[in-house]
Image 1 (tube, helix red, strand yellow):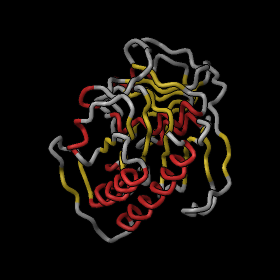
Image 2: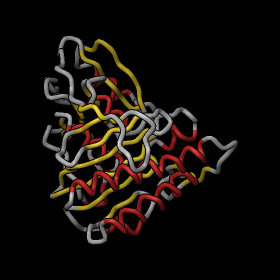
Image 3: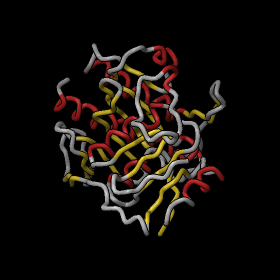
Image 4: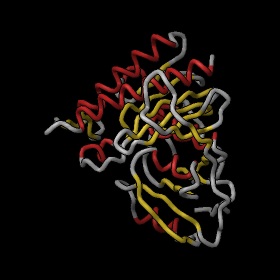
Length: 265
């Protein structure tokens, strides 16, 4: 893989998809439908998917592609592939809360090694550079000109006063029970893959997910967190979270800064 090209393409496509998403987000109304699994989908999900998948297939025709909105791609059997969630946090989008993201990841041998997470309503853009370092870009997000970038890294966690981030739409008693095992200074809720990025920038220390997710929900954020020095492990045994699983369904997991002293369930 040409990682310079990958970074450029992922960045451009995420920004183009973000523009289309915001065009629909800012419209007076938009239709919401239910998919076969009862999860919501909007015109923004579908339009962003068209932009990203077409761009990736043109740029990397020989690399397998898995995208949430194209069920036919879910039959891909490969350990190395591109994976896309064109609009993560659809519930946040529908409620106009802003916590939604565009996600593009690249998985090699079951490990997400590159990724981009763009939160267009928040004006935040996180991605891995060609060398694998994670950065946050600021500026006007021009398509062909990279703005100022700042390397990001996880916090030096204080286990007596941890900062926890949890799901905004899926937080439950099981999540709270696990969080209560830690000494928590502050707890915040956030939607979509932004939770990974908050740990990557040091704005949070740990994100436990005791609930259903799919690989396209997590791969890009996982890559960004890894590039900032963080880790993502299974909830049950703290082994690394792997990708390319049957049906692309994730087990429960924990994303965290390595200084956090993890607790077993």
